[in-house]
Amino acid sequence: MIKEQIGNLIYQAKQGEFDVIAHGCNCSHAWNSGIARQIKMEIPEAFAVDLETPVDDQCKLGTISHTEISVPTVVNLYTQFKYGKDQGVLADYDAIEKALIALKENFKGKKIAIPKIGAGRARGDWNIIKPIIEKVFCDDEDDITIITFDQDVKTVSIKSGKQST
Image (cartoon, rainbow, N blue to C red; front, side):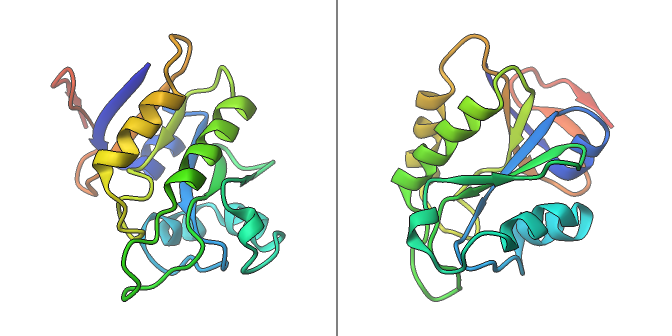
């Protein structure tokens, strides 16, 4: 089941709402903005795990790395090669799909939360990315929540309209 919420992914995960959080990463170890920067500050093990992978290696596209100790587990999805403001669309849709498949296969039975992967700093088209997520997480036992960030909101369910702060 795929759910959508407006909220704060890291806060909610640290409150125990999710077992796993995943986010899109570039292949250059650059975590200077967006949710990557927030994760780096709040759960530094996630950045350390990324640093153990080769830098600027296109072979990383579509793969994952993940924390072993942190709660929640953080999964780095390698969904874009480069980073930067003046580079157009950086999201690699094939890499997004492959990385999401790896996420699903490696974390079956876990409550997973993701931001709008690839549609923020990577400037991907959410109208392309969301159907990829729906294709990968199509089984009844899948439990994934897409969080649209709002720093002032703890949890608001878009589908049910139910709110808890």
